[in-house]
Image 1 (cartoon, rainbow, N blue to C red):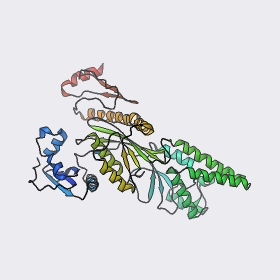
Image 2: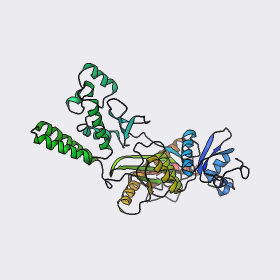
Image 3: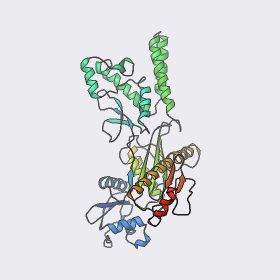
Length: 434
């Protein structure tokens, strides 16, 4: 067990602290506005501490700290140390899949659009994330008629450049043919920029420009060109209709919904840009440390915005409960965005309705799915967790006997909890066979 440092050696300044085990490995990283006040909470009777906190203190053999100038620097340092050491007693992000993004490779001479997953690359701009890859391909297929940029690989691009012959996409007007010199670099870059603006939600200017060009072509009696512009305009409008309008056009919002129990928290995030939903993401957090509801929101914000978020930092973040230190997190996000960011708990109106929709339908559904996976893993491993009911389920129904099935209903999923207490496995097996 870690020994308390000598009196007066712990500073009262902001900073980050690290508990280490006997092997010198970092097992927990925290932050504090006053290191002395925060660390004193760990050196008390273990019976007064949360079981997870008591276990961490019992495992640790030493504690170190790093002083910084203010609370925002303490937050940034804590996040960096957690990413570096992956401590076992800190909240763990458990993302069950790599979400697809629509990526535009701006670092190439002739940028291309494609579906990408995994690690983000420098020089590439990302839009999303999307729930499914086919949703990106459907959207891109519509937009290529209005913004005909290349989607081919570098190998295929070089092959057609060598042959001097464009591919089929050029002939069906879904590529402008940069491989064979059908378009110069600067006009091509303009097409790419217009596509990026459209995906960012700036659709009005593009629609107005296409309408003006179509009217101009018809006035000049260039009816074939006017027909092509009409088709491009229809494709753009169809793509706009696929983006759900949920807020005012000038609003950039991230809406965070949470459903949790004592072990895990399922999170769903809607990314709203220029009033339209441009992407969403879901993930699960393992609660391996003691957290208040506000502290859980702290960890979620760090997970979302700590690593250069592809959708950027919005003007406003809607959360179910306020963070433990709202001012510090607003200052941190303002620093990342470069302008004022607000963290709000919606109380009324459209934003409240939107937040309830995200929480009630998506977050709870994700929580139920996570619960199924957890129950399956538990049975496979033969472990004996205490039986409980998922807090996301509105009907909290449970038989009083510990030897029967527990059944709870989520919006889209039936979740069955099996009792694996050692004392009643025989009875549980009998009940399950009926």
